[in-house]
Image (tube, rainbow, N blue to C red; front, side, top):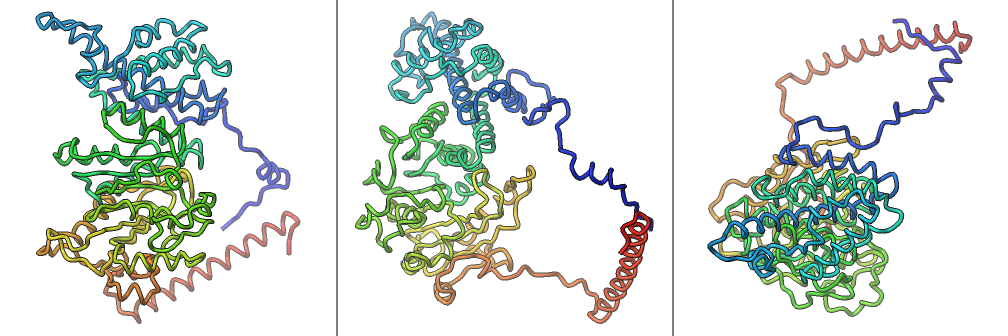
Length: 546
């Protein structure tokens, strides 16, 4: 085999040549060429994201997020208003007044004053004053819709925002119809929000991850907890994704959305506003408190006992102010260390659970095994109180915000529910680290089949008394007694318990297999020697023999 070695000049050029994008190619996703009709066809979200490049040249993704999402919100409520207005105008026999605010509020439709309607703003999109007009529109909407007070962005008139590009963005968003006749508005707008939140999280890295939890992780939590009825609580709710998926779950399974009550809290003011908008456009009535607030130091739902808790708290918070909360009543299992809030969050979740409540939440992997600063003792006390229901080890690269490996904890207040198996003094361990598929070079997602398999395994384990569907699967899941958890010193890493995956016997006798493999190895060694000789010879000819 002849191996050619490039000359010194070619070698240096190959080694030192910088990688340059041709034709100043944008780093935005490639355009989706599928037909797009008023946003009804899949792909319009990417078209909108690609248009973001025009504004992102003047601002970072964090700023651009609020420019775009504020306009999308404005377009949605204006479209819903105009649809209702047309209906009232056509109902001549009923005598309804299309300009009567009460008519809209009675139908749970936001009232949009004339100066805030999309048709008016689009007509002024090419004017230099468009930024101020949008700010005035946001103020007017908040004035007439009290539940939006202090929520909407109002900084479109700032000098740094290019008004010509802002006008182009308005024209683009105008092509997306959110009316029910066109696109089933809430579903389409939900797609916009989910797509953009994901893109912003990717663009912003860790900063973006503060408000965005990958949809597949949220869906898995919701599918496992099945929040059909009761109070749903998220004390670090970000953009409200847990609540939205809970509502979707109920709708998909034929339940009534009104059967759940939503409670949340968010410490970041900007993210709190985003959650309020996100929930408002979907018609979800949520109690997120009158303001943003730190859950540890200003618990806005102090007396709440929730039926379901779903959460993705910030990982490994070191500056959570624990030194001022040493005697807090929530620390029933031990005082959390001041340098890491993981077990402060876990204790807070348990504190707010109703007597038959279930909690599912994301944690850094260290929470399953750490023994530093008293964390091991707290975990031991939680396990001995028989609150840990299930532990799931997750695959890596799921989050935009961190490469820290994560797991899911599931806490159950009552493991002896009359409808289910008596699972007292037992813990289900699931190792899902090998699941998921790569969606780009750095991000992984759980597939629908993955979510179904994990959720069904948990439900079969908890299922009715006579169910025979659950069984331990080596390498994937195992039901473990509290005695065995004690033997492992309360380490809750699934890999310790589920064992190795069974390898199917191929039927080839051991002696025959070894003879075949050693013969192949001998051939590969011989080929390796030939390659080394050829490389030496070529290097010698180039003057680099050794």
